[in-house]
Length: 319
Image 1: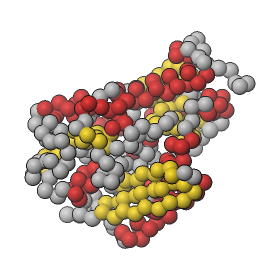
Image 2: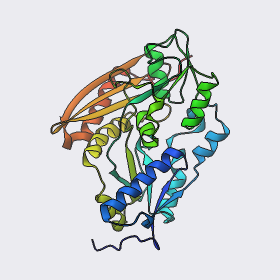
Image 3: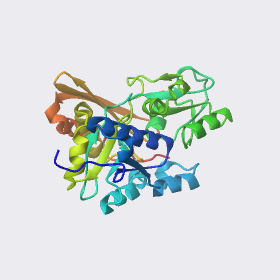
């Protein structure tokens, strides 16, 4: 490699949010880069950047995310720092990322994908089916809430945000009898034992790109591109190409309940997708397969089919 390598005196700076999970993901990225290039861990520095979304979420802890803003609220300041050159790359949870990046930035490196499944967390039941009629379930995810309302309309759904520790405390205080987290996050935090079990994707299809870490860089930065190439996971990229094209074609945001999961089957991708009315009163799903090189077209075609079945106003709130 002709580009100069980072050193402890001149480290590569990775920008991230300050949550325990975000820090765990950034440190995993640092460890992978250090190992891939035979460099000391001190050649990589994690830079915490506080975002508008984090600040608003702290102030309005009991308001739905859709009232706080869209996904960009949790990435804007990080991307601005990347554009300015304050950091060299940004580490993101891909399920939180908008489908389009700002001019001059590119997302083309993904770490190997973790467990894609949702985790069921409850002190009183071992699964969704075991929850008593009328039980209170907390979740900030519109996708999870709509899926749950569709499968178990008898349950009471309440807003439930905060880090893992905050949510566990709320369960202990009886604010709700169950909640959901991502198995990937629990695994990365070493807290998998908090889950009563992982939910089969056939029962609850996960969010698009759930379990995947993406690394964003300046498109003109060939030095960083060369460093990242060594840790890029191609199978994850192939799966996300289909899933994120599916999401983009549906204009997915925090206000639209959308689920999608692509799996590799030999040289093909099989993509499953689901869209729901926000109140859970209707759910539409479909699946299709295509060669991996047609991943983006697969995602767009599956989205078009579901939108055609849904008709106008499917994502509008009722009542």
